[in-house]
Image (cartoon, rainbow, N blue to C red; front, side, top):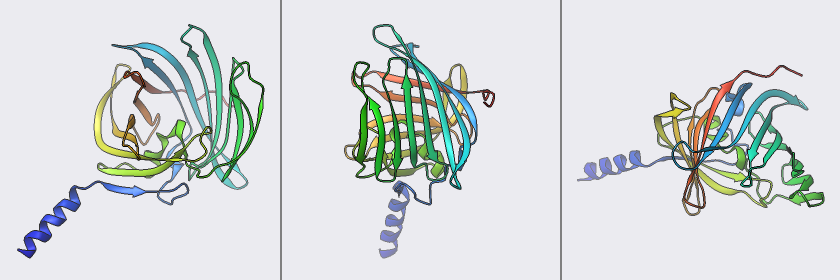
Length: 254
């Protein structure tokens, strides 16, 4: 009887998800899986094939800052507004190459909206212009809890490592947030997905908010370029925003 109960308990434990709860800086995270590369992302909305909402190109280079390896992401893109106007923008981000901790986020756009922010552990400083007709604001605020950057949350699973059944619980933060919120990344397994006419076998990962388990995104990820090949994000109106990403040639070094 006792052996039967022990066997049942062991089987129950095996069926439970393997959960890693990590903070920014955890040794289980190693962003060096990300190598220099360039990739183009397209965002689609609407029924059927949908319409192209925005498009951008990510370029990653690896550098050094005070003896510490860093990732420098340069993203240039364009977005079509509801009025049919095109807004062009550039985003420059610097992360710790190992921990993925953010150091700097600078965004400029053709409509004047943007920010230039420096993150030093628990403090964010810089400038921000939140709207085209707004004045430039000075930023100097404490961050109650820093986390992995929300706009690049899909970087986390590959930096931890893929394993079917693994759940990664981490804080996720963005410049508009005073404190990070906890999110769960569940590695469901390998799956085929259509990426602009090509079938890609990738790791399927769900990203959920920990507090209410709301689904925030479904990612199809690789541990090599272009890393994120497809994503789906539920929108407030019930529709789905779809993203495709393909590798492109690295631009010439400046």
